[in-house]
Each structure stands twice: as C-alpha cells, then as structure tokens.
Image 1 (spheres, rainbow, N blue to C red):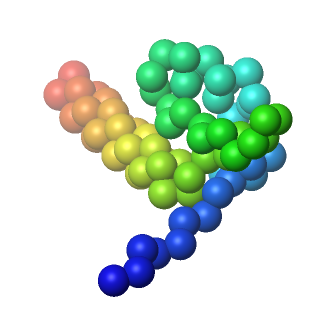
Image 2: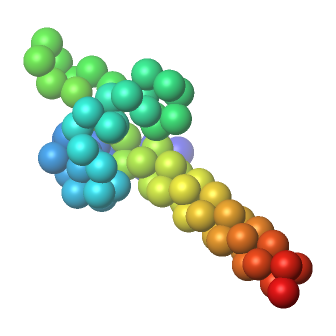
Length: 78
C-alpha cells in the first residue's frame, strides 16, 4: 500500500497558519511547545502540515478548556 503524500509548509505559511511571529515560533520550538521543522536541504526547512494542524487542534482544545473553567469560576462567584 502506498504511503499518502504529505505537505510541507515553509516559515511564511506557518506564520500565516498560526498568526505567530518567527521569533515566537522558534522560541516555542526551543521550549518544546511547537513542532520542530524538518531539513529539506542545506538552507531550507519546512514543517509537516499535519504536525502544525495537530498543534492548532491542541491550542483550540486548551483555549476551550480554559474558557470553560473561567466561565465556571465566574458563575461560582456570583
């Protein structure tokens, strides 16, 4: 069975997809909070689109959980 082709995203596309700056992306990689790029060549890196999509999904879940907790806490203090 043939493996499904994967899409690679260059930094410009990753910045557009995440809304984050270059410095934030590389700092998050250093902290282990964002997927590291893969090397395409001597001076080229890219991110596998699936790993960026997984990060996006994780951030959305964290945001929803955080928002729900804040609403519960706010309602408990009334």
